[in-house]
Length: 107
Image (cartoon, rainbow, N blue to C red; front, side):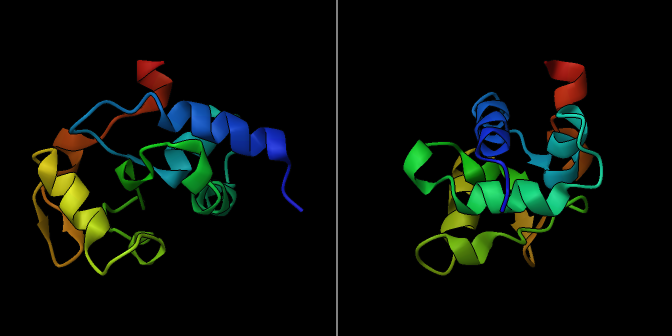
């Protein structure tokens, strides 16, 4: 079973992601000193519904909306990102590097 305090740490980082920016599961894991634990960050995102975190801003390392099936409705994750000015084509963030927020550099 995953460490609940790890989930809390993940949620704290995600709450810091600015409007119009995204980060990756792996970037969060690296920031928390848990390199190689991107999947565990994904589990934390799946458990984030009751914690009011902007989980839609966390994508995979290539900018793909891999967590979109955890959002209500078929395109909610994409719609939330597009409302923040991020262009999505075929479930992938366009100009990913421009929108990428690295917690190691930003926090």
